[in-house]
Length: 432
Image 1 (spheres, helix red, strand yellow):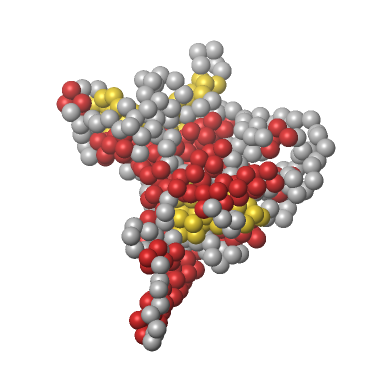
Image 2 (cartoon, helix red, strand yellow; image 1 turned 45 degrees about the vertical axis):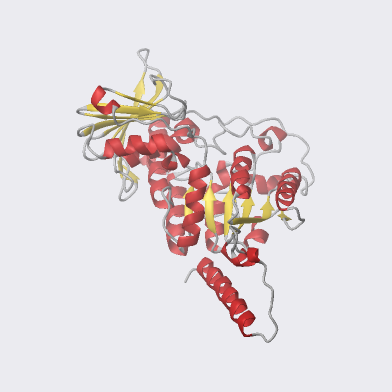
């Protein structure tokens, strides 16, 4: 039995014992309705107790949704920056009108708490895999912002750890719970487009760089723990720009533009094509007329289905667009909630969804429900790992500027250089 289930069972037992004791007592005991979940209130025993690790702008948006839910109690924040710890603590205490939110600099001090059921992880990308695996070892369920990994090896290690420790894991790829993306995937999977021939994922310019900012005096460890901020990444001197968010595009901290959006859009393509269990087997970087590398990658599954990762040529339906093409038509959608199709027959299938693709409200709702029921969520670690692996493979082909083939079962390339790029060295003492 998983640790989460033990806690829930214990709470249920204590609630039942309290009710039995009250009924048997010689003197009546008054129990508030809120403690029993009456009058629309959520009983404390039914609440999911949460903590958070590394809350920035996107994490702050997620946190606001968790705090608004009556079936969630947020109890603790961990962040290597004092100013962020205190801001989240104050936000939680103001929400609950008390002073109970605890602060931690090191995530292990939060994760060891027996009264925490689940954690929101919204650190920079470099920490997503390591923090999620550590949380899984402590028996905590995880909602983790994307991208969930920086390498193929990290993707596999995370999926394996989630399965090994039996936790509920939801990647922050919220478009699997957004209406227009769900409808587009259903249209593709139902055969209404005919046999699928191509799926298109909106990605960004792939490149990262190795540049360092000039060294600045390192702050006090209680203000910003720079060593902990770096985590498993190679050491480099402190500069406040990194901590302020300017780590994107830096190879040591980031997986590039294919992964940045592909963690959403390649994921959508795999979902619509019913390829959640696998990845393409061939990756072909595209070139401009002058011979320079383009930003597009074409990939092919073992059945011939083509995955196109591209940044341009979209219809303007919003960021993170996806298009599914079949022998009898196509459908395209994006973060605006609007959809476009190739013919009048398909147009009758369409609906307008007001929720933008960037809104994680329904995705978080599914996560909380899965924490309670132990059901596997839509963006679970197994399916998220596969779409991340496909994105990593595409970026490796782009960096090498040549076509490579990949075995999605062995997770090996036919190319020695590509195989070396499946993983990155981790700074001691960090290890998967």
